[in-house]
Image (cartoon, each protein chain N blue to C red):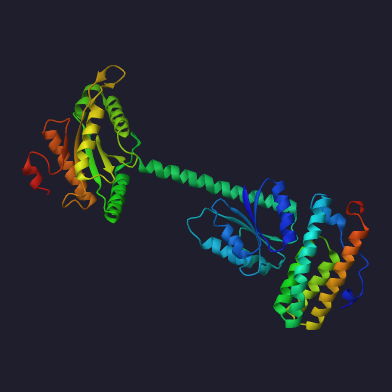
Length: 313
Length: 124
């Protein structure tokens, strides 16, 4: 584990370093507060031994700076000082130090105290890991593991914002499995689930890395396509439709044919500036694809039934 | 300043104590003492200037720093003198500060002489 020693007295720094190296720490040395602060910009440096008295920025000031910063993971700080009066110790700890040791340092004690620091850091790592895991679980659909509705809409909004800045269009696709209810009724819900999983896996194989899949509800899947103009979106939709429908799906007992209908919309179409409108027009296009006999791709504003289109454009 | 004007009867370095702290590594101790002497030479220039400028803050800071490194190397006598210097700086007493600076010089020389005469690994 990396550790910082901020100590202006070279002899003290050397003795500390020798001990820490013996205890398998990777030591970074700084002889001023400013140099310590510079070194602490390295996010992997999470243990710090700071001498209080240093020229310029002192150890207490470095402590305060560390505690003021955001984004960084926790830095465990041991403040060293020859000051051993209670008010000094209290002031040192109040500046944000986790621990306080008086000089000259007893090395057996330091070693034990560093173990405490390591424990705290490991605890934080575990906590952050679990937090990320939970965040991921909360952002995904339980069955298909693609993004859930809240998350995919959030992503669409971000993508539209970026598209506006970078002047690139964003594509949205709404698609669902044709006659999904019939599959569920005929083969049971476990086969319905399996069909959904297969469709998702076939879709994933055909989209770009930057495209994002989400489960909008039921068997309705939404795909966000960054930098995808109106002229492109139909081709992508066609590719996906074919990739899904080309082969039948194997279940435990039999194989069943499966197809999807796709509705597409892009932000470079007039009036499609918000995520709500984009989703709505893509949804309408999907409806039209169903009306056209399913297993087809419809781009909003390009269908054969202008009556429907007039209601939303 | 009786503790400065009369040479201390004890040895300038408590070898047993310092070796205890660094795991008995005498070559490391030699390295540390070399650093100490080099640092002292740098500080000596600063001390003389601080005396001339009557820069009490600087005197007390240098005293504090020397006290720390002397304590770390178990240089008992030097630690005491450095402490006197630190206090003199804080209390703005130029005469005691000047005496302390001179005493440091004398003591560093006697440490050198002591180390030249005695093998570190043969001391008790």
